Image 1 (cartoon, helix red, strand yellow):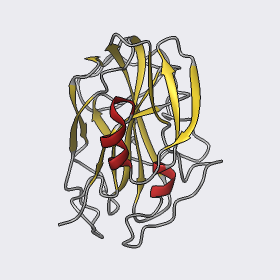
Image 2 (tube, one colour):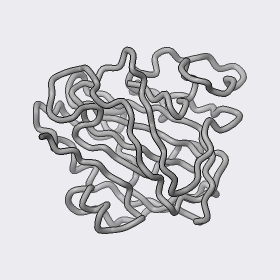
Image 3 (cartoon, one colour):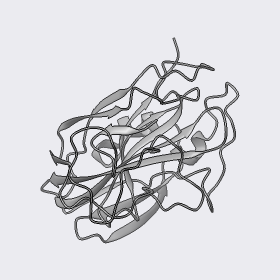
Image 4 (tube, one colour):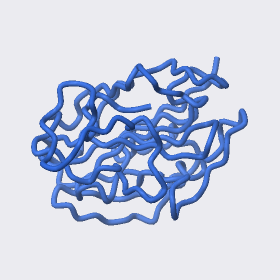
Length: 234
């Protein structure tokens, strides 16, 4: 799977800005992040943002409809970074059944876009990095991640949310195949530490962790929590 809206760095799809000097289009963005690859895979940003958003606005994230394998679903997060892609705070997540509508052994994606509201307390930046990340339910144990360079207009000085979960990547915990148990790995997501990110690029950690299901945490703890979709099968 690959994110096509907003434009992922170096994607061959869509009406995107000119590539940074010395960079090439990446025709393998739907492949997992290699173990030795940095977060985002490509670390040189576009010269101009691919989208300009306002804190609190509704956005739609779209994925390539050709050549993507759903791998039975899995856990997806959408996150924001203000330090050039080193630290990411979650703004929305779709746990268990990302790209599908329930338990399945199919590789065919059933959902190719997600619409949600950005947190109202995102700070301003014309150099923010928006990320989609995914741990697949079945197949080789992999970590997928695409990043987009965006501008955000907001009034807050900082945003506090869960730190993006990284798994099945060099130096991080492994999440095994789900084997029809779609709660597999949820503890890593539900117990992720809280971090605070700011437009200056400085970050801090809150050692308090979420308790229980992340969708419940989003409902009970207000704007400091990311929107969460834990889709239950019919």
